[in-house]
Amino acid sequence: MATKEALKPAWYVLHTKSRFENVVSEGLGKKSFEAFLPRVRIKSKRRDRKLLIRVPLFPGYLFVKTDLNPYAHLEILKTVGAVRLIGNRQGPIPVRDDTVDSIRIMTAADRPVLTGSRFKKGDPVIVVHGPFQGVCGTFVRYRGSGRVVVNVEALGQWAAVEVDEDDVETFRRILP
Image (tube, rainbow, N blue to C red; front, side, top):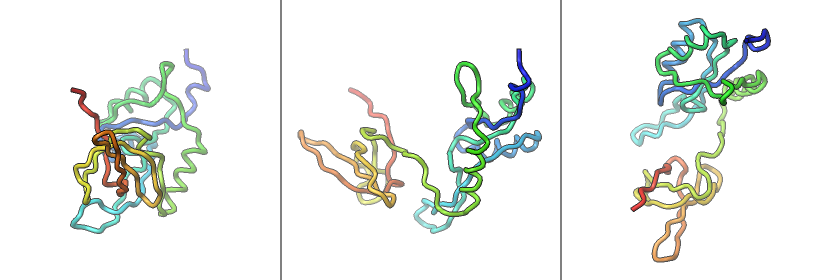
């Protein structure tokens, strides 16, 4: 049975389909839900343009404020592109208001915002752009200024290359 405290409005993280953050945010707005999609300015990765574009700070996620009554919960999940509210077996876990407020301030400042690590030490990676395109290896560490170090093993030895973080993606190795 729900208590009054359980029905107090709070912020929750909503997982969306890939690249559906804007669609979900607009859909929630049309349903009168307060949604917050933090966006940051980055340089376009397209080689033919040097534009600053606004992209989600957390790709695939946005924040929604709700009291989680059963009707509201269902309406949120029925929104086109919505996948699930992030939580555990007991249900969705609320995000502290001051955390959301801090993210609002950071993204409103229109200054570069660095996010957490995309790669962990030992992750298999592939270089997808630049002079080392096609090189497969293992992520070693961040060097700063958007640079990463990738180890490539061959003949029982390794060689390390330093590349732009944006030129590297993780991949799953297929075992023989």
